Image (cartoon, rainbow, N blue to C red; front, side, top):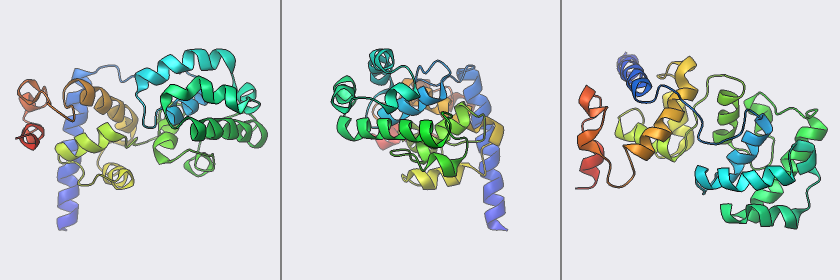
Length: 223
């Protein structure tokens, strides 16, 4: 009974936060500029590990000029690919993953990016975070992208008590409305960049604090 009451309380809180963030960010756009192409989003999602979305957007302008589609990337020259993505960090592993999963998509999935968690996790270098990004943005399925912003802010707002991405995902799934989950995560990214930064969050000006949806815990962390 206590668990049900707690979950219902969290569900009510999560719904209020969803609506509040909608007011702040009416358009919940993905920060990665993938032009609606599922394969490009997959590539960019892999490159974004330990790298900023802004850097990935810059790098991919030239990358997609050289390798414009899945088939071209599947036949990529690895040293050339590594050079193109060098500034994204961990470039050797990322290059191998991108080439290899492009081959799998071309040869095993008929050139179409899979639309299930199980199949997406078969792709080299693709974990739950990237898979959820694809499921939510491309296939419009319920999806929680537990990135660093989502993990940090969910903790600060009292929605999840963990720094483990899988645990945070599992904590948010039952309390965030499924149809809002993907956009909610995008809004958390923008909110984390503009208001609730890891260091020096703007607690006194925060639009969530003004609605009594945050107690200023972020600011207290830095005291």
